[in-house]
Image 1: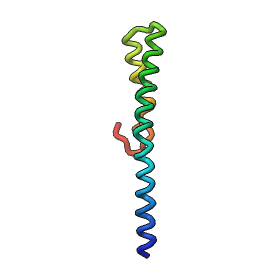
Image 2: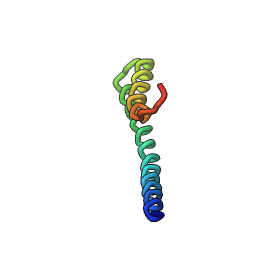
Image 3: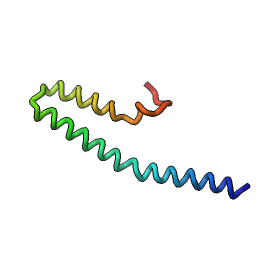
Image 4: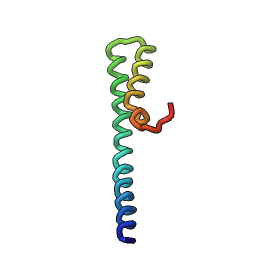
Length: 73
């Protein structure tokens, strides 16, 4: 019985470890992509206010909170 409990705890720990080892690089890539998106809009000569609004929408679209069922709105 204890082996099963320890196996479940160990499996959960490994899963969390993998999640947290993957999350920081993904967040950095997301931040870099946001900057590239903003620079691309500026290069097209859009109004700075429009660039700001579109960048905010792009950031919201990639937000992980959108995908979590218990996120607060």
